[in-house]
Amino acid sequence: MNNSEQLFDESDIVFWGRLDSELVNTKDREQLAKFTIIKSYKGEISGQIAIVNELSNSCSRVFEMPMSAYYVYAKNDDEDGNYRISGRATFVPLEYSIEHEWEPQL
Image (cartoon, rainbow, N blue to C red; front, side):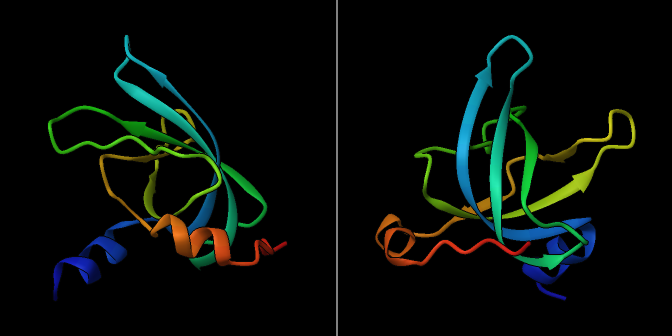
């Protein structure tokens, strides 16, 4: 099993989404990112979703540039019902994101 297969298997949801907004909470070292789902690959999700991005180590990255697209691999946090990631997101180049017709799955 390669790393991407393992990451997919370990995640509760996997989707490609447009970043609508983001807010970094430096005190708690996390970022709240809101997405519109473009395509869901795992999990029954559609419309909009909020993701808590843990900024807990040097490998963590923040979501940037609202209106750009990201592939997101997240786990459900049973404690508070949110989906969380710990630095696991890849982004689609902005040029491609701009050219894509944004038609979320409903």
